[in-house]
Image 1: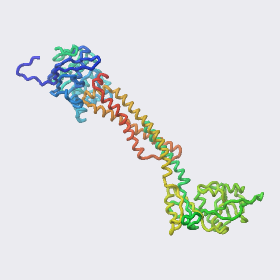
Image 2 (image 1 turned 60 degrees about the horizontal axis):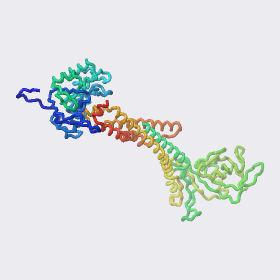
Image 3 (image 1 turned 180 degrees about the vertical axis):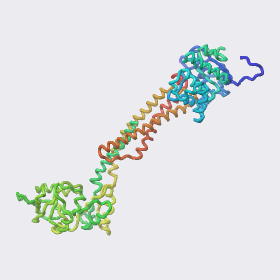
Image 4 (image 1 turned 90 degrees about the vertical axis):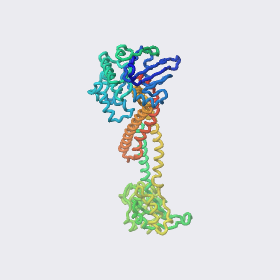
Amino acid sequence: MTVPVGVALPAPVVEMIGVRRFFPGPPEVEAIKDVDLTIRQGEYLSIVGPSGSGKSTLLHLLGLLDNPSGGVYRLDGVDTMSLRERRRAVLRGERIGFVFQSFHLLAHRTVLENVALSMVYVGVPRRERMARARVALERVGLAHRMDFGPTTLSGGERQRVAIARALVAEPSLLLADEPTGNLDSANAEAILELFDELHAGGMTLAVITHDDHVSARAQRRVRIVDGTLQW
Amino acid sequence: MLGVAALVGTVGLGQTAAGQISQKFDLAQATRVVVEPGDKNGQEGEAATELPWDAPLRLGRLNGVEAVGTVSTVNIGDDLVRSVGLDGSEGKALNVMAGSAGLFEAVRAALKTGRFFDAGHDQRADKVVVLGKHAAERLGINRVDGQPAVFIGDQPYTVIGILDSVSGRAELNDALIIPNGTAKAAYDLKAPDAIEIRTAVGAAQLIAGQAPKAIEPNNPSNLSVDAPPKQGAVRKGVESDLNALFLLLGAVALLVGGLGIANVTLLSVLERIGEIGLRRALGAARRHIAAQFLVESVIVGLLGGLLGTAVGVLLTVGVSWSKDWTPILDNTLAFGSPLLGAVIGLIAGTYPAWKASAIQPITALRGA
């Protein structure tokens, strides 16, 4: 990426330096080998790779769901390597919004409650949670579905609920893991358009996918093969 | 829930049954107070004092006394008792006892036939006699409508009644009972041997304390009082025996119930592994997850406890109703049992909650 001289770069959200992750064997598997990755504020990055390439492991590391075996990972300038589990959970709740392939909505809660759930552990008061959840649902175009159960929604609608849930806590980074993997092409397109809008609005996005069509929408593409990044 | 129901039900029924048993004890035993003259200076056989004839009158004024009567053995010397029959039967050696009119009520005597003598017979020293059950059998008398007579020595007495049963003073069954006045006139009876008191339920201890002072205000310690064991002692004994058994049963039921809750919670942890992963991804710390499952199992336990208590109370009341018993339920039991359920939920939920909190978020997310 070329940047005009004299213009300050946006602050990095993610800084990974020499990050490694291996799973003790036997046989020992080195899923991530020496990854350097910087994602700056407002960037829209896609990470592509075939299955088994280590992209899920990379996502878990990025999302603080897993600990690197070595290297340095700073999120919003905070060194995550030295954090205790409890602090990592708080950081995860505050700074990262997850969008999963299989949505992960709670079947027995309404759409509104599902969205509000992501602010429970951040300590937002209930009244404010509900108000912000409404705003987030309006933003993804689901204002009319607020009091429905997730099981009555289509796949595309469910993924939009999940995106609203990821956005509502105002994270620094939106992490999406195969966000269109369970959707037909029309719904997938709608989700990708939503991502474009979010990007235009200044959100930092990292989308992990094996689908070139999805990754092509990103501003910057990174390929992961056998645990190493290729530019 | 079943555990708590079983506990409340068994303990409730246990208490009710124990209450029932001791009520029966009460009727037979716990309302009987007997006053006798004490031994003089600890010497056996020598009475310290004489009981006054008007003792029934004095004791009758005490609150809690339901019936009171004197009883004495009459010394008839070598006199034998004969009934007047067609066979002109030979004389038998039978005891003769004297009593006041209130005696029969005081010893809960029931009549087989005829009537008791009353205060009028007593005053007039009428020659009437009431036969004890066995005495009547020995004399061959079983009905009184023909006004049969018996001879004590050479004096005829009219049989006016035959006893069927007495409680407490069994020797009345074997005796001929004549009014005090008659005994005084015919055999020079000096004083009552004993005073039989029937008290209201629960009043026996009180009356036992008051009776000597009412009879002999100057020297109450000259009297010896025979009262039932302290109120409730019998009941307590029976209750604790029964309760130990029922509590054991209840504890087993609770253990099973607790294991049930643990099992259900463990299953729900496995079922909701995706939710656990999601919550962790949304910033929940391990303790949040543990707290969630712990709270859930406590609520399950509390609801189970409430339901169980309701069922147990209904069971106790229902059984009592069908048996015509008085249901007895401890307040502590009724209000403590839901809490007990909650505590069991807490204990049962500890392991599943720990298990849930130990699940790694990646495993959880992959699993669902």
